[in-house]
Image (cartoon, rainbow, N blue to C red):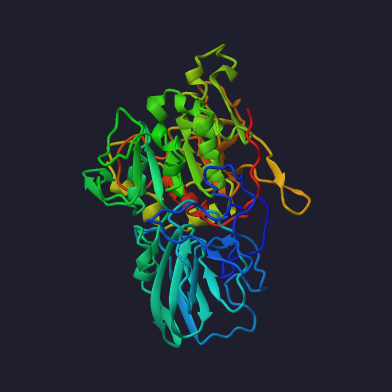
Length: 495
């Protein structure tokens, strides 16, 4: 989870709660706490005794353990006759996953909704021993032998496997603990429904494929998605790039609540409309669509030169440096207001859990240069942690705001941005001033959903084999932003 205040470890059980408090006029709200459904959607909730609907169980929150255990998931006095151990991996079967939850249960969990939805976190009792994976993806916990279901999940990625568990120790095969690479709820395989707005300068579809969401081909020193194998949808936003199977353009997607509700995550990489200001973001209806979708549980990822896509709908959360902020530049055209020119900021990882995971990655993931062309400049590695070299930044975050909302208990809570990585600014344009750090990777809560921004591209400026540090960070955050959170009422829009 991305906690903005420390909360107890919670886990969804069969008692299910809805989001509540959403605007009844929202296009994603039909007057109940459940999301709209279609004829092909998976049932999204159960009904409690008072007639209200609720969200399915999915994930744990961050913090201390309410049951009083040592963090490993076994409560005092619970002595199982079986021990489960193993390592959880990303869909590509190579990258270990930290903070994933693993448990063995006699009943299968409820299906993951196939539309955007609101999820609360519920406390796990001592009758349900579990484990949270270590930074290297490993886990071990006591449980009870017998017939049941092995559940492995992180965020909206989940694998459920029927299992006959014997007494004693069982080391689980990686095939049982690798997160799925496609969506097949009937077979116990769930991944988030993802939309990618294909950009000119940030080929995010290749990164997702390298994470295991699609097949890749390697031609020399180039590793790229094999078109047609991706388990996500592409909305074409680029006159310079093309990917077969595009469902339409970005403007069409964000203009339609019916289309948006089909997705759990929307990626808006650099850049929208070849770097030109996207006029669709001047439409107040479109901005309301984006906000309503995020408030209903959507995850909105924006990178670099597409900064307008986060600043326009969520302007109260952050302000950006502009070229006219530079003491050497008097004025620039409006379309350049977020463009600081190309710079490669040296970042520092601030989040201790992200840092621990990066430090635990095996050497082959920490340094991909041996797989790539030795005649070119080396790609960044993880050899300088906690410092992390990022590349291809064109925008900068000037200031983050405190965003206070009602906590439902007579007080307020700050749902503003968490800074994951901070770093240097653009020497070319002098913003921020030399020696001053600024946020490079941020995320915040909005209703039941989250917004995420990186000041740099996700993908390097050339083709290469493997995943660079900033792509690895993206993978970590995609997993993190999918877990449950407290559904505070979102702040009112500004402007």
